[in-house]
Amino acid sequence: MRWLLLEKVHSIHKGKKAVASAKVPKAPYSSEVLFIEMMAQTGGLLVGAESDYQKDLIFAKIENATITNVPKPGTPLQIEAWSESLGTEGGWLEATITCAEGSVARAKLLLMAVGGLSAGQTKSITFHEAFMNHFNVREKIILPS
View (cartoon, rainbow, N blue to C red):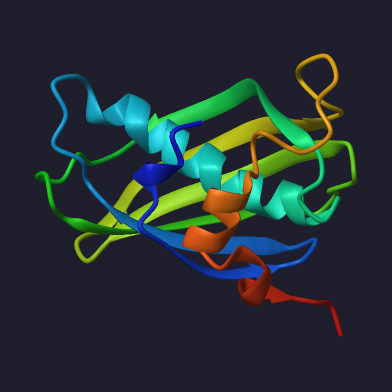
């Protein structure tokens, strides 16, 4: 995952919902693909919290996705991902992207948490130290009450 699509992680309500923000990228290819990735990355924050970010993630499936609007590059976006049945192995997530003008995208995604993706790996490559520090991920976690 190219985590730099997200600009800020706002909150991770463990087991329930993650909220992040970004801007519509200026890309030489379709923004729609990047919207899907933004939703997967935000959902990845939620899945990662289940294993304290020790496992790697696999973006396994897109059940459905709808892009309703493609705002101009630089437009601020809010991304939310949530799940009602998340486990340490991952699960199905719903995600949305909105901007000031309204809905941008919605999707149902399957993200899976797995052990190391390469032989001899002892730390997560998905949630590496630079990523965790850049977004202050652990400071954004809100535990269930």
